[in-house]
Amino acid sequence: MGILEEAFEENVLTTRVDWLLNWAKLNSIWPMTFGLACCAIEMMAVGAAHHDIDRFGAGAFRATPRQADLMIVAGTVNFKMGERVKRLYDQMPSPKYVIAMGACATGGGPYFKYGYTVMKGVDRIIPVDVYIAGCPPRPEALLEGLMTLQDKLRRTPVIRKPARLQPADLA
Amino acid sequence: MDFQAIADHLSVANAPGLLSVELPRSPDKETKDKGRSGLPYLCVDPSRIVEFLTFCRDDEALGFEVLVDLTASDPSSDDENLWVLIQLLSVRHRQRLAIKCLLPKAAPSMPSSTKVYRAAQWHERECMEMYGVTFEDHPDPRNMLLPDDWVGYPMRKDYEFPKEYHGISCE
Image 1: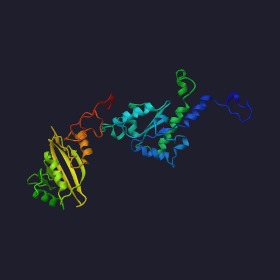
Image 2: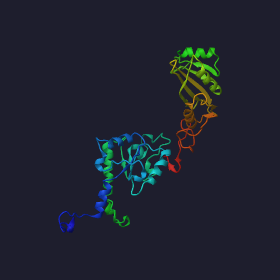
Image 3: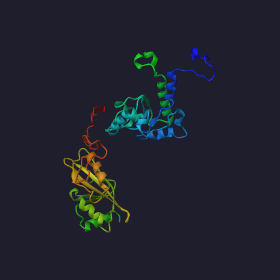
């Protein structure tokens, strides 16, 4: 770690605060238990032993938005549910992230043309960080989405204020 | 009893509201009859449906103690009528019965069957919001699935899809 390396005695490690906080944050993304349709079955498969989302520290599915960092919108969002989705999102403490899982949450999916009550994408009511394609996506795709979110967190500094950031920092 | 025996029994007993017995028939070129496939059913006067269902339930030989289904249908935009379709089941006698009521699309209204079969309650609520059929004296005439402020009856042939809902575009 730069010039401080080996400046101290043994068993002392040096690091950057940004790196340490991000390391802690991105390896403990707790998702909210939030299945709306068939995508939830794949989400449950990701939580189970074979795919095991716990390897990425995101296996602690919380039953309340107040303890969750990540909302995985797994399934079809209709207008009636959309109000609840918005309210749950507002109840989550910042920093909070959203994964739109599958075709329905991304853009209405098979209900795009004739689904009169289906919202054409959950990004019309809440901001979405990662979109996952598929109907429903394979469990590996959800893991890929989670890792994409982790990459995004890794690139986001914690200490420096976002206003001072240059575009190059986020590239 | 098979369907014919049930129909004969109802005719002999002079069941209230029974209009006609409809059997499936094959097409006939001479009379230009297009024919009809599917189940045999009874046509019943919608204004007397409560008496008719009470008779079917309480008659010893019929014993239809279960309401399997109550739904509606908008067969064609040319048709002036909506159909309300009722399926009954007798577990004791192992027999089923299909009933059809014709209601004018301009003002579809009939008495509620909830006094005879309490199972009809949710089915009638769904018919009300999806087809605009009014069931008089329904104990709880709220929307079943759609939001409370929904406009229009989605299952009607002349239904126009909403452009937006609560400021969220549906396009």
